[in-house]
Amino acid sequence: MTICFEIPREIEQQIRANGIDLEREARESYLVELYRQDRITHHQLAEALGLGRLETDGFLKRHKVSSGPTLDELSTEIGSLRADADQAQSNGAG
Image: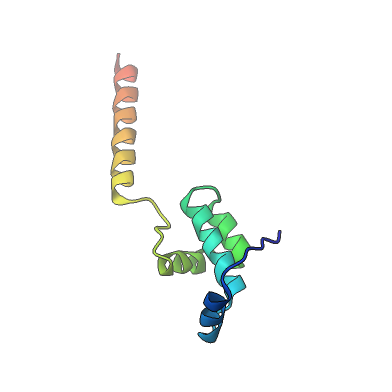
Protein backbone atom coordinates (compact mmCIF):
# COMPACT_ATOMS: atom_id res chain seq x y z
CA MET A 1 0.00 0.00 0.00
CA THR A 2 1.20 3.48 -0.77
CA ILE A 3 0.24 6.41 1.44
CA CYS A 4 1.00 9.97 0.35
CA PHE A 5 0.69 13.24 2.23
CA GLU A 6 2.01 16.76 1.93
CA ILE A 7 4.29 18.60 4.34
CA PRO A 8 5.56 22.16 3.92
CA ARG A 9 8.61 22.40 1.67
CA GLU A 10 10.73 24.16 4.31
CA ILE A 11 10.15 21.28 6.77
CA GLU A 12 11.03 18.76 4.06
CA GLN A 13 14.23 20.62 3.20
CA GLN A 14 15.20 20.95 6.86
CA ILE A 15 14.70 17.25 7.50
CA ARG A 16 16.40 16.13 4.30
CA ALA A 17 19.36 18.42 5.09
CA ASN A 18 19.90 16.30 8.20
CA GLY A 19 20.19 13.20 6.00
CA ILE A 20 16.92 11.64 7.14
CA ASP A 21 14.99 9.26 4.88
CA LEU A 22 11.51 10.78 5.16
CA GLU A 23 9.69 7.87 3.56
CA ARG A 24 11.29 5.31 5.87
CA GLU A 25 10.74 7.48 8.94
CA ALA A 26 7.07 8.11 8.09
CA ARG A 27 6.50 4.40 7.47
CA GLU A 28 8.14 3.37 10.75
CA SER A 29 6.23 6.04 12.69
CA TYR A 30 2.91 4.88 11.28
CA LEU A 31 3.67 1.23 12.05
CA VAL A 32 4.73 2.11 15.61
CA GLU A 33 1.47 4.00 16.12
CA LEU A 34 -0.55 1.04 14.83
CA TYR A 35 1.30 -1.18 17.32
CA ARG A 36 0.71 1.29 20.18
CA GLN A 37 -2.99 1.23 19.40
CA ASP A 38 -3.01 -2.61 19.41
CA ARG A 39 -4.11 -2.57 15.78
CA ILE A 40 -1.20 -4.81 14.72
CA THR A 41 0.69 -7.48 16.62
CA HIS A 42 4.38 -7.61 17.48
CA HIS A 43 4.77 -10.29 14.81
CA GLN A 44 3.04 -8.14 12.19
CA LEU A 45 5.22 -5.17 13.09
CA ALA A 46 8.36 -7.30 12.80
CA GLU A 47 7.23 -8.66 9.46
CA ALA A 48 6.39 -5.20 8.09
CA LEU A 49 9.81 -3.90 9.14
CA GLY A 50 11.69 -6.99 7.98
CA LEU A 51 13.10 -7.56 11.46
CA GLY A 52 13.43 -10.51 13.81
CA ARG A 53 11.77 -10.65 17.22
CA LEU A 54 14.72 -9.28 19.20
CA GLU A 55 15.47 -6.63 16.59
CA THR A 56 11.83 -5.52 16.80
CA ASP A 57 12.09 -5.28 20.59
CA GLY A 58 15.12 -3.01 20.15
CA PHE A 59 13.27 -0.96 17.53
CA LEU A 60 10.34 -0.48 19.92
CA LYS A 61 12.67 0.46 22.75
CA ARG A 62 14.30 3.14 20.56
CA HIS A 63 10.80 4.49 19.89
CA LYS A 64 10.01 4.39 23.64
CA VAL A 65 7.29 1.76 23.25
CA SER A 66 6.87 -1.09 25.69
CA SER A 67 6.98 -4.38 23.82
CA GLY A 68 5.67 -6.49 26.66
CA PRO A 69 3.25 -6.42 29.52
CA THR A 70 3.81 -3.90 32.31
CA LEU A 71 4.46 -4.96 35.89
CA ASP A 72 0.90 -3.96 36.80
CA GLU A 73 -0.50 -6.08 33.96
CA LEU A 74 1.56 -9.06 35.10
CA SER A 75 0.46 -8.60 38.72
CA THR A 76 -3.18 -8.47 37.66
CA GLU A 77 -2.77 -11.59 35.55
CA ILE A 78 -1.06 -13.47 38.41
CA GLY A 79 -3.87 -12.48 40.77
CA SER A 80 -6.48 -13.65 38.29
CA LEU A 81 -4.71 -16.98 37.77
CA ARG A 82 -4.43 -17.52 41.54
CA ALA A 83 -8.13 -16.78 41.99
CA ASP A 84 -9.00 -19.24 39.22
CA ALA A 85 -6.75 -21.89 40.77
CA ASP A 86 -8.27 -21.34 44.22
CA GLN A 87 -11.79 -21.62 42.81
CA ALA A 88 -10.94 -24.78 40.90
CA GLN A 89 -9.40 -26.28 44.02
CA SER A 90 -12.49 -25.38 46.10
CA ASN A 91 -14.83 -26.88 43.53
CA GLY A 92 -12.79 -30.07 43.35
CA ALA A 93 -12.59 -30.44 47.15
CA GLY A 94 -16.38 -30.22 47.68
